[in-house]
Image 1 (cartoon, rainbow, N blue to C red):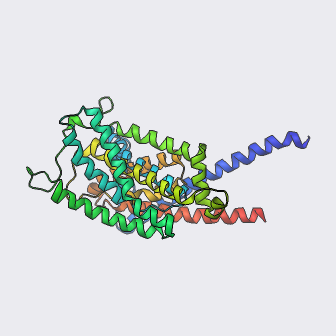
Image 2 (image 1 turned 180 degrees about the vertical axis):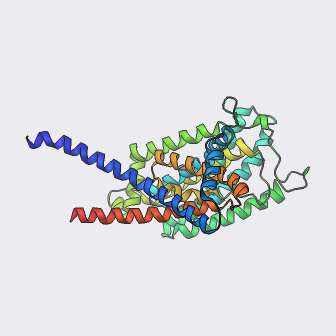
Image 3 (image 1 turned 90 degrees about the horizontal axis):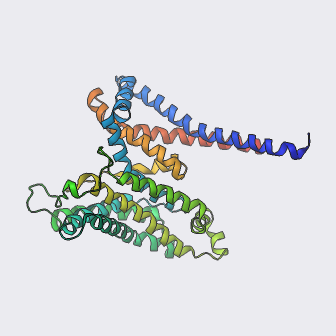
Length: 358
């Protein structure tokens, strides 16, 4: 048989093996994390099968719980989309909580004011655009410090996040407070003026917006010249400069897009679920999504699956916490175990590739 005839088959076999390896690199850490999490529960005197059973039933196998899972996905997906843009460009935007919360607070104050004299559709669109702008604006300082002076964005974005969370609470308590309530909160947007529900469910249309944004971000980063420029900057800034790319401008643009999408997540959460923001409210979704983006390897399609899995864990974990007596935050332990085993599997795979290469 000729070499030409063997080449396509060999290439196909290599592609299949690579795909199987990629699937295993995801499934193995998940399985190991669930096993390790079960062992920890046994040590604590809890029944792991009962815990996982409650999580699965509530988060996946009841219609009400499944609706809550899809609803919870909306803000997480939009935050993930923003982080994918930043991380693929080599930028650590860890200011998501401040960007999310500021956008949410401004949205909660703006929507009830606009709905008085604007149609519902226009009000919702304007609020989302303003939320994107507010969050992008809040990222300007770390963006400029990174682009112009090379200041580590991990420090500056975290600093701006803490400041943003505090400032958002000040806005709720002093400037946007509803005078008719005893608990400090913004004016509540009526349920009928929020994002429309899908059919006869409690799932709001924000989940469709979030899914569309994630897909568009994935296509932008993998199929467009702009996305490829961002990835070049992330892979090798020096090479990007030699190639004639304006790294400073691309850095600022990356921060703005990333923060804007995270801010959109804040707007969707308010317009779809809460309708108001109470003082000291902070779901802290920003840092929660970071490991999910890493688990998905910055892949937009992959992150949809991980966000769905994590959302089901969050919803089911709330029920399991009451039934089994395990803290709701135990879900974060599972995520931490996932990251640990992911790192181990990645290291072993890297060593295997080095041996094969040698």
